[in-house]
Image (cartoon, rainbow, N blue to C red; front, side, top):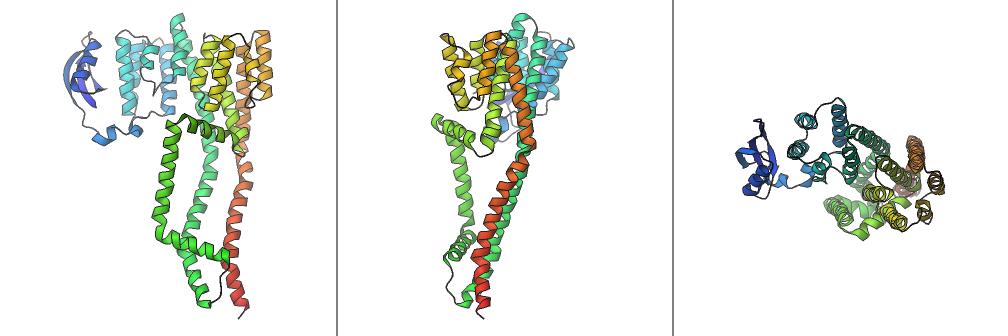
Length: 403
């Protein structure tokens, strides 16, 4: 549960915020461990009890992380002390949960923790990639460059994700609109036509009987169908989130999807691997450390296994290109370019070039996505309309022709 508190720092400054703990005693001990003098501590009542425990209320948007990183990099570049910068960003953050996280990071930094360790205490907000990018900057005394480099990377990733999401909006809207129109026809139009066909007293074709039966079911049991769809969707989501085998099958299925598999998803993950490795190596991490972090943040179990396998083979003396060449999910161009980088000692620059190349490829594919999807949408919608025409209008035409 959460507690509102008011404390006084060693410098005499009064601060108020929220802390999460199992009970008031644990909250008090956590605040005192930061060398803070507790003035007041009481249970928070701003949000209903059940809402406090719903994950949706504690999610921090990727966009918020990008903005926070860029603003922090800008403030540090302007020679603003890190603690002052964190407190300033916390005050202007709209998300209450994220504000509390930043304040906790600020308190930990004030208590003597380095920024990377303070951020690492919140793995659900700051990924392992963010933490590992900041560590070398702290060690070398060049936190400013590390934050700027990290902000550039996160902005590129956010731009890429937003482009793909925006491109998916059009086909999703078309399919949703057609589904709604189809459902309304089945509930409101088909029953009226069915009554007319039954009055004619003629035997209905099998396809017509099937459409009429589905219409009757949908009109009387639409709520059951909706419940099955929602429940099935929740079950699949829960299974994918909690089962390693299910997550692997889901990620594998995404790579095999028509149009989206090789044209978009594969390029996204390859670009992400190349960008992560390049950024981490240039940031001062060894190839083994970079591979470990990349595996943790690539976002696809299939590619995560590939990178982990490559890490183990590199550990025992193999080359990165020699490990990746065995996997069909890695394009030959990537293997050849990495081999060149290993031979010339410029692996980080080659990986950067690969990331830029695949990012441009994704941009081009996304720009043409509507042209790729439109034929499929036309085929699906046209086929559905043809089925309705044959099932409903043809019997009416036959009855009219027999009069």
